[in-house]
Image (tube, rainbow, N blue to C red; front, side, top):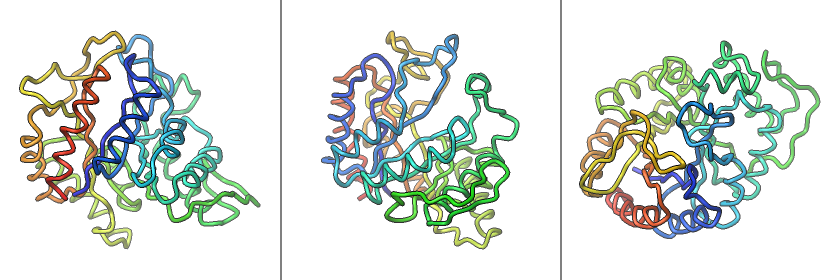
Length: 299
């Protein structure tokens, strides 16, 4: 199993220097990939961190300071963006980091964010399907597409990716599982192992129905983690250092996380994105080397 790690991206403690420091350290320690999250318009009343830099820009910065480690989104919401512009952005990112990107996408869920971006939430699934098909056409050198939400004629996009961009689908809704069955990976959120196994079985059924080899679709999971003996309050840290939310944070020693993940590997997990729940620069510096023990355990 391959192990990736989310970069420092949210909250007041994050700086460009810390981002690049942790990215370079993660590459040195053998992590497979670095992950970046996405929110464009955060509701002021939500309690979510409002300091949330845009992921593609961050990935470009990290691309030129690293050499081997892959870069992925966990996950990008394409509905908030012009699909032609994003196709060009991502092809340019691949030009900076050839063959090192993973485009993790999701249909989106935050209704106020859709409203703030002026996008209809009702057709978000069909929109994402059309976007993915259009990107694949552009990146393969095709000059036209006829989608309802993404159509173009006589378009030449360059630079083109050095190889096909893997597209991983985030989420566990029926639509997400169906979509993962014709894309390149399923990037699910942490859930009990039996729930993960049911989701993966559904993805594989959809892959088979689409004439795909189910084993060609990477089974990935996002997991919030904290190294230590005492679990923090569940959720996430705000810019002020306060904790919010009801998320599941897996807390323990690296060996405990390895033991937990072994059951998921047995159920078919091939990749995990560890998201450290850190709220100071020093905690990031402590967590990344500690979590490298998980990398070594699954080499």
